[in-house]
Amino acid sequence: MGEEINSGEWIAHSYIAPDESYLIFDGERPSGFGDCDLYISFNENGVWSEAYNLDPGVNTGQCEMCVSVSPDGKYLFFHRGVNGTVISIG
Image (cartoon, rainbow, N blue to C red; front, side, top):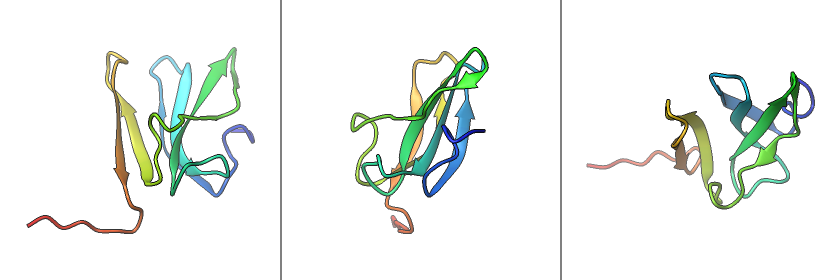
């Protein structure tokens, strides 16, 4: 993948649409809102677009990661938390 995807501190936990029309991943970039954010890139005739931050409607000052999409494409699932912090409920 080109610089459109492979830039910033790191990228991880990619989800690619079944029809390969888009890719969502988490990573740290200067355009981020916090620890790690979700980004989307679109496949336009075999060329991946610049990756766009999913904005504060999804991303926060915490870490958003490990994204997936429901089979019908209506729901976005992901983890949100503080990177490196273990929360214990008991």
